[in-house]
Image (cartoon, rainbow, N blue to C red; front, side, top):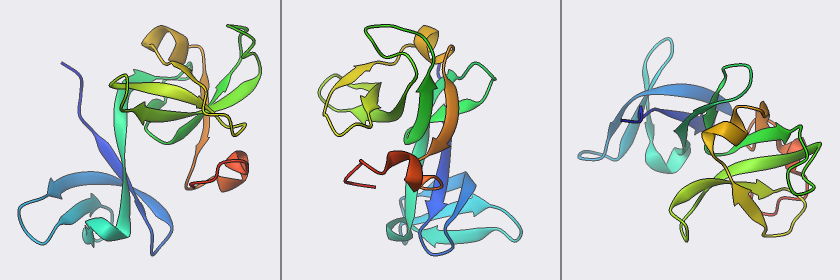
Length: 133
């Protein structure tokens, strides 16, 4: 079974935090772990789910991470992609940053050769062509 983990980008403090608990029953809050423990309303945070894979350096990959693709599979050598959930195929995919809506399969085998170089919240300069970040 895949490990379920989340991290949260706090929209007010502009900081990333490890999520300790998600409470959907009361007040719609996300509890994040840092000193001191702080509760953030869901509408003040962007949740990013761990996709169950790690990059070539053992770094956990989350939805919204930017990965560098070093090898030439279908002409993708040296390009960066955003890892996103794709509703139509019910899977995490690597989405082109170039502005096209093209995406590619994001298997563990492929992702284990890539490197996480940032994420859409902490490194917006890496996705300057991305319209919805």
